[in-house]
Length: 550
Image (cartoon, rainbow, N blue to C red; front, side):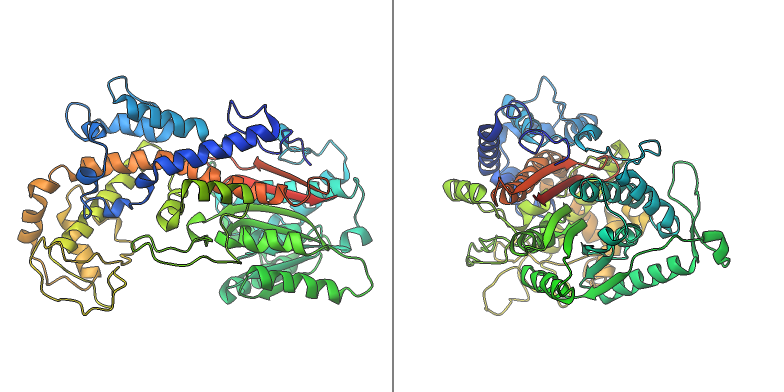
């Protein structure tokens, strides 16, 4: 399948040239790294001050990065983005940075790994390229409303899907052959990808949200009526969508039908849907292709992989995973209490026997905070963006510490504690018996977020939480001046930058688990590849998993 490396995935050196043994050694190295530094993934940056994480858990020889003369924001940014370390830093930290960088899957795009490249060539004359050209011309109006990022993703992913389907058909297709294949877009959303692909094949758009489904239906109607037209937009920016009242300006070639389904998508419901669609075809032979562009959490894991495995009519799978924080795990223990149970089915991680065995060996459990770390990398950020992100984490961490200090609880927010004991309403400041609260603050105005001082942020946050009358401005300023919080900004910056390095290793392990689960189905019958499809600066979740039954 495609022109992928011999093992189906491009591994880091020195694992890339050793076949199955290289894959095994790579997975073992990833699990060993995550197990050794699991303490680093188990705290959220917002909790770093409340838990006294920096003074209680953080390695003593790493604390110097938050102190003069070693503290340097420029040096932290170089480490977080590019893995560059300074000669005067502790040797143990430099080794950690080196291991994280060395074990992360390569994320650069190599167009030669794809049989037909990553963009259509008008001069090639192949059926696949002609098919893509038809899809592109037929859907010029379907781009309305897409950001630059979404355009990049839909253009490339649609091209890869159509070329893979044509290759599976031996370069033939079109007409009745195309009508005998159906693409099922899982987590279709507004239908950007669905309506692009509907220029070449019949499609079923599946989503769990009625609002998203209605948006996709409206998009398809406007494309068919010629009402949507994609503008050129400003150079280097997103396109400028517009409406055309003259349908003759947007003449559309014949398009295939799109059927919309709104269901709660799980492994069982997706399998049932495929089987019902297959039954509707009657005696007619029909093949299905499952696709998902940034399919969230379990959609790209247990749901799609299970449907590919269980349904003989599903011949191909093409999915770009996303939102690893939403994955369910086989080990469902609570991160705070350690209590929980083991799921026997419908979990999204681990799916492969190889990773499952290593987790048992290392007594490893991810949990939400570790999975969330896989989504918190700085690949798309410039220096200004990283600094803004770090400042936001510092203010939110200090806010959590302030609520803890004054024993304030937002209305209608419960404690993290699972006990059923009545909550004590009045506790002394700094009492160790106080409980941390989970709450969602929401987005504050930009001028508040960008203010250099903490006090305006704290005032706005307290008002948002319904606690505006509980703490005075003088109390806020006195709180910030406490000895334990004077260096809090530096401490949060260091913790978050170092934690982010482990994010790519965690993401690599999650991706490899899905790759191995598919690879284990039947290596003589199923071809599997996992390749970088999007430019990581445009789309950080840039890995596509392709599987095809021979």
